[in-house]
Amino acid sequence: MGQGAGRIAFTGLAVIAALLPSDGARAANGAYAVDAADIAETGSCKVESWLSTATNTDFSAVANPSCVVNVFRPVEFSMQNIRSRSDGEWSTTLAPKAKTNIAPTGIGRLGYSFYAGGSFDAMTGENLTAFAVVPATFRLSEAMRVNLNGGWLWDRSLDRHYLTYGLGFDWKFTDTLQWTIEAFGQAGASDTSSVIRPRFQTGIRYRPNEIFSLDVIYGHNISGESANWITIGTTIRFPVPEGRPARERSGPL
Image (cartoon, rainbow, N blue to C red; front, side):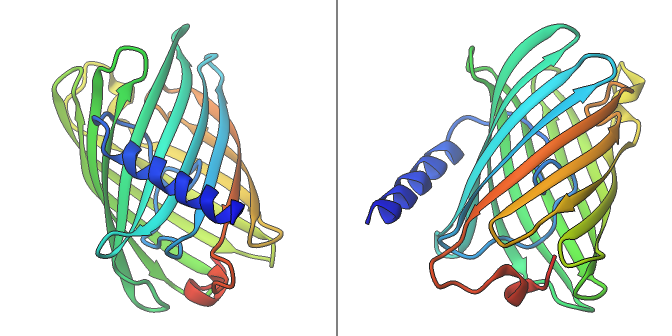
């Protein structure tokens, strides 16, 4: 009963979070920026967290709890909590997001989903960004997939609109290790050239079981500042009791 009540409370908080005013955040596959089309099983939850540090002393610490609930269809609600330092200035940002799968993925078949959300300054309540993205995934095999993302971002502080894009490749090359490489970014007008330059990340995920995974990632220009980044991330999953393991629903990835 305690675990069930905790899951219900967690889900309720996630739903409330998704209804808060919007603003923007990098939102994807844990610490990675390019999202896959899949979502978890209805009733499951997870907590993703990561620390990122850059060569220019920028820094971010992120916690991202999420749950999948059935709102006429399965929807994954999440709320990123971001504490960051940029150019010596600290900020705290909250970024709610809701994601639903439209067409399931499969080997040799393109699946896609849709998510939308935003971000806002936790101290002032100022709306920072709003975004909407369509992630698509094509599975080459049970151990390889290609992820494509296309979307829209509104920087409300500058009142500028951007087209966003992403291309990623995942390869699970052993039972416990997965390699990811991705390029992503945004296209539009900017006074700072690095903001619209392509961004890059590559990393290794160690996933010894269905519950826990650890990521070590190298990135360049990941927040549009031309710096190099190192990220350490973890994911802790809370699957549905007696539910089907992820590898049985969508393959090992």
